[in-house]
Image (cartoon, rainbow, N blue to C red):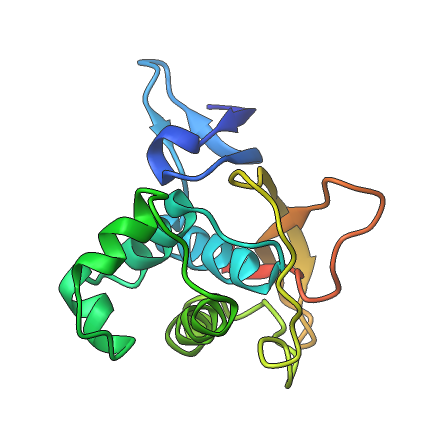
Length: 176
């Protein structure tokens, strides 16, 4: 199987490019290793980015959390479950405080599924949500890293779009 750069936007529902992270067999079938860990890593990386979330990203987080709209509304203590649908369809947006609650909920429930992502003690409460209008493209590469125990692991590593990557976006370990 050959390695490649792959646009996983259609599969994930948010703009994500994978570098050396997928394989294609002779029949053209694509395989993404440890998809569950990749989904959690993408969700945690997005939750840690302070840019305001758009509907597709909120829907992605809800799906990775494996919640229905009603369950998500209940987890956020919302009396109107239709508000989740309005957020996801960009009819309205959650306020900054509610968005922080959503981000913290995602971190609380997904951190164990993205074990290599470091989450600062005050990552969400101290975050200043900044405006922006569309889903942010993210790129992840599958690389070999050596853990503190000396074992080599395959890791999903966020690739920065700009000159530097946020410190909170580090490798998510994947057993080799």
